[in-house]
Length: 142
Ligand SMILES: [Zn+2]
Image (tube, rainbow, N blue to C red; front, side, top):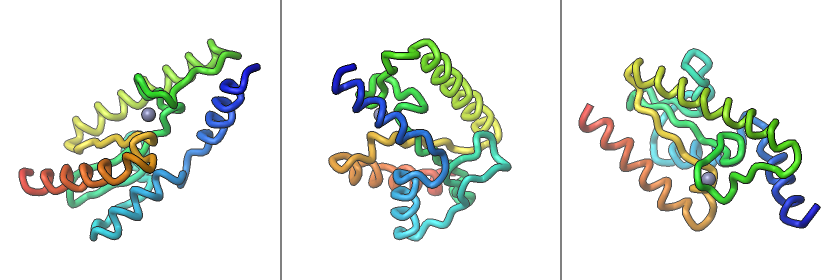
């Protein structure tokens, strides 16, 4: 096993917790500070969105790059052991995400996905700013 493999594994393991992960908290805190009010982990909606903004008819998913198979992302690396298991698992997650997104859209929701890598220090500010702009456009034009 090489060093990269070990690193990947511990990164992957850190992703295997679903509620109140740090990136989610970051987004919630930012939105709250900017006057947005939201519901958390709304089980009544497909996929239990992490953040629901009824006023903006918008749901936000904050996705871990490994767990949700972020395409072309350097944080999405399939482990070299049990490869088949992981490929299958992640593919199922991707499929489920797609189905849930489609359901939400057909219910009239705007669906925003924020990837964990977009919240790393160097990109965080731009990502959150873009999110605010997007939300504002939703309330203006809907
Ligand atoms: Zn990513």
